[in-house]
Length: 568
Image (cartoon, rainbow, N blue to C red; front, side, top):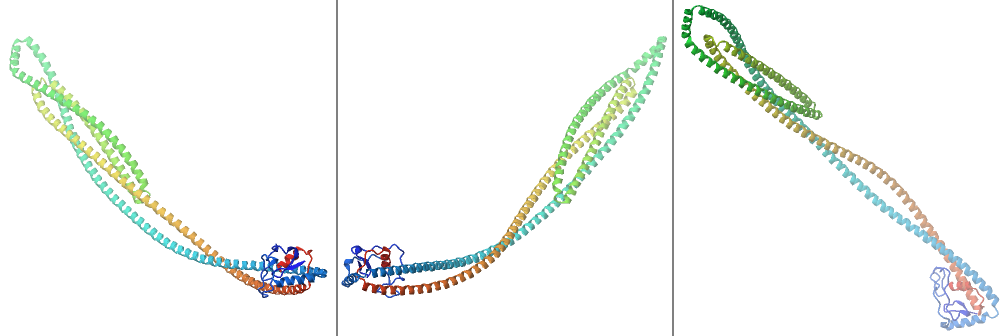
């Protein structure tokens, strides 16, 4: 048996006491299945559970009674009608599925359209960002150009500063060269003065040589006189022997000789006094000889000290030459004038060394001549001593010899004084030379320190100049790379703009085609909906006719038909 529910749906009689179960098939769109009490465009099919049969209206109960009466004797026709209804439900379900697929396609197309719009918006944002990036790159390029101009200006300023420092260094080197030239001139004047002093000393030595020649001539004269006196003494001895023989032969002659001896007694006293004076002179001569020996020893010690000082001066000179060579090697990188100046300094230093060696050789020659003269003086003293021993018995010769010896002693004192003065002058000249060498060494060290500081400053400036040049070169290379990258980016951006324009055109075309397809799909959907509505109306008409003729239905209908009717 079949019954109508409160919504005029046909349900089996076995399910009259239970509410109908919801369908498991996909829900049909609301616009696809209209109801009987709504317009065609706005009819909806309830998807909720229908109320119980006990809540039926009297009209529905009357219709159920009519349906039960109609069902009697028309079961075959009802079965056939139910089969037609099942076929119609199947067609409706297929149409609903097709409409759902079309709706899903439309939704997909709308999603594609929205995604295309979103991609267009993202492309527009990308273009905006790209324009901002291009503007930023332009600003960075302008900033880079400004920075490059500033670095170029700074580089030019540094170059000008380096040139100014170089000119200042050259000017300072010229001043140092002038100072060195002035010092060399002073040194040359000092050397000339020293040479003049040496010439004066040479003249004094020549004078001493003349005096020594006079002494030698006097010694030769004294020797000749002593030989003559010796010969006379020998002749007197011969005469004395003859006189002794005569005395032995003649007493009168002895008496006469005694008288002569008595007469010669005062001369004997004078001879004793002369002997005493000779002994005193001999002691003084020995003391002078000892003092001269002490003076010679002192001169030897001073010579040893001079040799040591000379060695130290040579060592200092070698050190100065080595430092000068090092300074020359350093200064050769600055200017050729410095090298010429250093060569001139080397030549002058060599000239000074040669002059010093010449002076040392002259000093050694003078010292050897002094030693030779001392030997000659010693020989002269020996000859004088011999002469003194020989003239003991000669009164007149002793007096003359005493006068000559006093004169010679005065000359020797003058010579000793001259020698002392010469030694003092030599010592003073040596001290002056050592002081000048020390001053020159200090000046050379100060000049070396100044040259080293200038070289260090020049090296520092050169390193700073090289570093700044390298940094400027790196900056220029970076700017060139940045410019090339920017050009590539601009080209890429232009290419991207072209691609974006083409993509926008394609998206616009796709959007237009999708809109057209959506319009067509909507038209097709509206046509399908209209067809479905017509089919549903026909089905409802036939169903109403079947309801009017069918009163009872069998319980053999399938659940699918029930579900289709519930969906309808």
